Image (tube, rainbow, N blue to C red):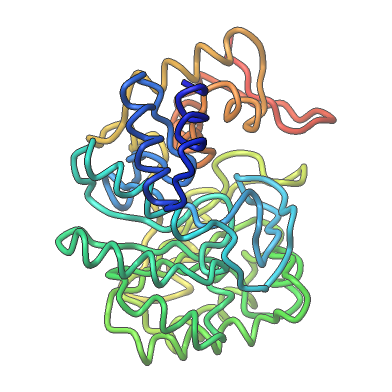
Length: 344
């Protein structure tokens, strides 16, 4: 296969799209196709069969949240850049359209903060022109809405799912560990400004972490912020698996209901348990078996599994949530990170 690719390059083909198109043809012919910037469709609790689009490398983000399941941020920044080239993303999307059924949703998410990619609006425009009947969602940490170009880029999205874990500065710094120059007020003001311009739906996610943002002062501050944002839905989430630091715990069902009552917002609910994800159409038992088979041979970190299985980190994460909820796997924190192993 590599000789064939080299031959293409020796033909002096200068059109990058044509090179990627021919490259994917070779991969399909050899049953070796594996996308680098697309993942799934993954079994999403909220969006069904969702094709993920990853616009930044792991892990470029404006926050370094203590609970992040993807891992510690390696490039903490608010700098907009073409971190993943537009042409490469479009080449993979065109190949996917030719060889796969349509998903329920296109979802910008992945290894970091997607709105840091300066071309996200261009990719969104391409999706709307090419597949106008498929809705587009954007999962974002909500930190970049103070930038008018970012707000404009997302206006064509059908659904935006921003996060808002804290609006008091002390808690924001403690739980989200932001890049230099980011403040809770700046993030909130930007999000409010976006809601004035945006006509699609907004589902606001709040991640509840005991000992960080579950106290009455923080919840009441969030209550006030929610009323200013006026989202279509507020979703409460909590820890499924280990975060980037040790000692974190998930909120109990009783705590989540207590917080729902404090927020007193008619469209607020707790996100369904991870185990329920396996009941949706997108859940693949062969992917689950591949993950279990890998861990059964030896305990692995999330990064280990990405390298061994060739799957996107977010795709693996969806299945780990279910497997741990079903008590089929467990975690142990060691010097190199969090390892997953089979429950004996």
